Length: 328
Ligand code: SAM
Ligand code: SF4
Image (cartoon, rainbow, N blue to C red; front, side, top):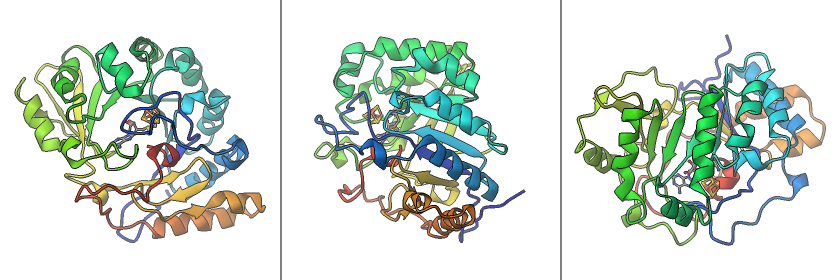
């Protein structure tokens, strides 16, 4: 077994790949209304280039792959990419993060191509509020997509919600209550200080501690002992079918558990979501370098992983690329 260790003895076994920086929504906390300037088609990695990088990363010890964006389901031939990656020996887990709008159309084909699971972003259960937050999204399409993903056994269904004070925080309790009836993992992600310019303010950020307080007004939360595979801390209500997770990049950062690298849509490998450090794999790939050289660059990016990020003071970081370009 390969062990891809960084200099803080963290095992790196997870690669998140942004396959496009384009999106069919404009969530108010993620993108400005006019969108962001997107890459030209020739600037983004081809599926063959992505697959080659995955194969080399797997040789180094990566076992889990997540496809994200932007909105990954709007990239042409996404099912083909899933089938290419799922056939790579050593890929033990292949998942995808989506806003869910196109899941009804693709869930079955994706499952057949080897996708194991999906995370669906959903920030309101109210159709009007959902439309407002996403600037035009139709919640019915997402709900149909979730049902289809369940039918196709893309399980467990994980629902990601970003509570933003004054926007959707009054729905925190309703999201948590979903777990009484549904076997979903409902995960609350702290609003992070980047994304749509001018939208972030510290008073809109809700720390996990406050979210937990609101949820425990419904019923006590019981900690769930999970072998930790990601950044979420999990709990459940007694007799509930689902779980409630908390991802707290600001209030309780999980850098000491960090197991990941990110590959941006334009082919840069990024050791940390919150640092500008990137290594350009695309340039090397397109110069025709060997697998050994790509492997060296991946190892270098692991060496460059910082011990932790420095966003804890909640200051907005305008120098960071939008999350849709890095891959959220
Ligand atoms: N379009 C897909 C989706 O929405 O699931 C995948 C990409 S999206 C950038 C990935 C995740 O990043 C989503 O769950 C979204 O809620 C989250 N996200 C975007 N901007 C964020 C911010 N400023 N703070 C916290 N999470 C954010
Ligand atoms: Fe698009 Fe996802 Fe960002 Fe919403 S959160 S604008 S769906 S990339």
